[in-house]
Image 1 (cartoon, rainbow, N blue to C red):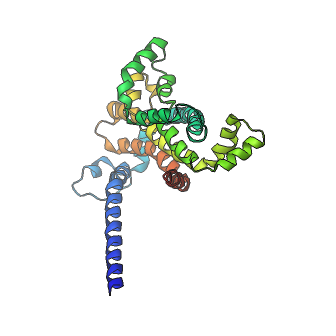
Image 2 (tube, rainbow, N blue to C red):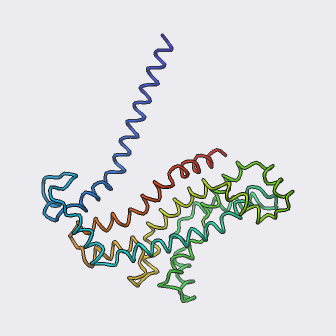
Image 3 (tube, one colour):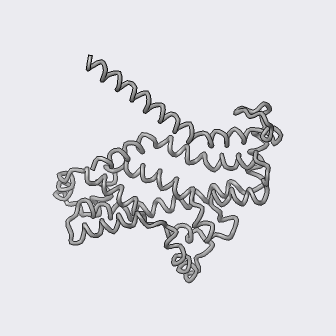
Length: 281
């Protein structure tokens, strides 16, 4: 009797948990579903008092054609790939050796340095905005790709994430590599990086999403429209051409969001593996 009661309470908890997760999923996805729905409709149907997800008359081609022709939307997306790709490459080049040193090497001050890394996670990027802006102005780098890329080349979150993954790698593997004559840098790039590929992919997805959607820093260092990143491009698009024409505006937002969705779906398995494995330690 007691076993049956526990099974019933467990089933009730599972139903409640799935209901809460389902409700959260609906709330999270609703804005994106409405965005895509509006991008397929004509202006008259968008402002119609009767709302439906699917349009009665498809206006998708006109909306998406306006999104790519009235403003250089393809240029904004290309700028997003250039900036996020360069930032992630620099972050990976710095985070891998740092994480390896914090996880597997013995040196004085290691714990203090790791504490500083943790403190770095608590500092919002807006705190250093003014000093960085003055530095880039003195170097003559404002209004360039470098102005957007350089402040984000070191990621303390990436160092922390990879360090947590490296702690799960057996020391015997590293000792065997040393016996084979590999140096510490060779171990990082030839042993640790392939082993940590799930964590690298998870970090790559998070870095892509964060830097692709970054609006604050590009807004203050970019003045030329042809250097605008995707979020800035949407603002330029809304101000210059779309106005209250929400069909092309939502089409532009959908086109800019699509690379993030595709990247996450393509790396979903590795992303989940990387996050769960780094949470073990």
